[in-house]
Amino acid sequence: MLKRTLALAVGLTLSLSTLLAQAADTLKVSAIPDEAPTELLRKFQPLGSYLEQQLGMKVEFVPVSDYPAVVEALATDRIDMAWLGGFTFVQARLKTGNAIPLVQREQDAQFTSKFITADPNVKSLADLKGKTFAFGSVSSTSGSLMPRYFMLQDGIKPETFFSRVGYSGAHDATVAWVQAGKVDAGVLNASVWEKLVKAGKVDTNKVKVFATTPAYYDYNWTVRGTLDPALAAKIKAAFLALDPANPEQKAILDLQAASRFIETKPENYKGIEEAARAADLLK
Image (cartoon, rainbow, N blue to C red; front, side, top):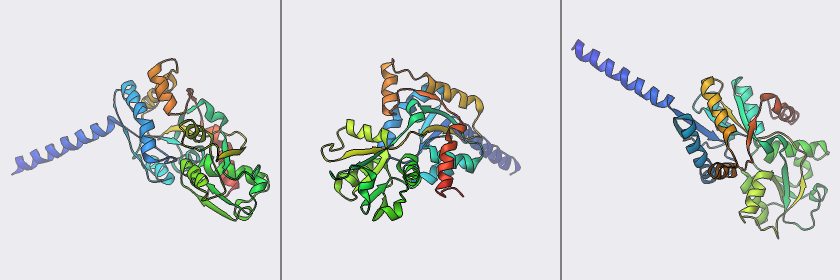
C-alpha cells in the first residue's frame, strides 16, 4: 500500500511538473477589445507565428471580455503580454506596480483621435451643442479619455454640452453608430479610422472627419513585471527586428497598422495619467 501511495504521489508530482513546464513554454498574449474579437485574432495570428519562430516557444492569444479584464489578467499573471492603450497601460502599471512597456508603433508617439459625423451641417465641435455623441469604451485612451480631456480644455463638458452621450464599446462600433444615424457624431482613434476607410467599410460620401485632437502617446505592448527578463528582452528584440523591407514581415506590420516598432518607457505615459486624474478616472 505504501509503495502504491508513493508511486501515486510521484506520478502526481511528475504530472504537475509537466503541466507547469508546458505552461512555462507558452507565451500567453491578449489585447484590449477595441475592435471585434474576430478582427483582433485575425490581426494577431501572423504576429503570433512570427513570435513563436523568434522565441522558440508556443504563443497563445487569450481574448478578454473588456478593458478591465486585460488589466486584471496581467495583474494576476494569467497572461504574459498585452496590447494596451495608453490609459489601460497606466491602469495596469498602477495596479501591478511593475508592468513593463516594451515597444510601441512609431506613430504611437504622435497619436490622434478623429471626430466624425454624417451631418453635413457639422463643421466643428461647437456645431454639436445639444446633439448626440458617442465615445468608444469608457476605458479607451483614444476613444474616450484623451478626446474628453481636450474637449474639457476647450470648455466643453460632454454630459452637459451634448443632449446624450453614449459609449459604443469599440472604435469600429462608433463608426457604425454614426453611419447608421444612431448618434450625430463620435470619436475614434485615427489608426482604426484610416484602416476602415482603406478597407471600404466607411461610406466617406456620408461620414466625414471634422476635427482631430492634438497628438499624445498611446498604444504599446506591455509585459507583466514578473516575466523572465531574458524572455522580455527577446520579445522586445523580435518586435524591433520586424523589417518593412521583408515582404512577410511587412504583412505583419501592416496588420498592426505599424510602419515599424520602437522602444518605449513608462515616462511616456505621464501625460495620460495626468489627463485621467484630471477626469477623476483614477482613484
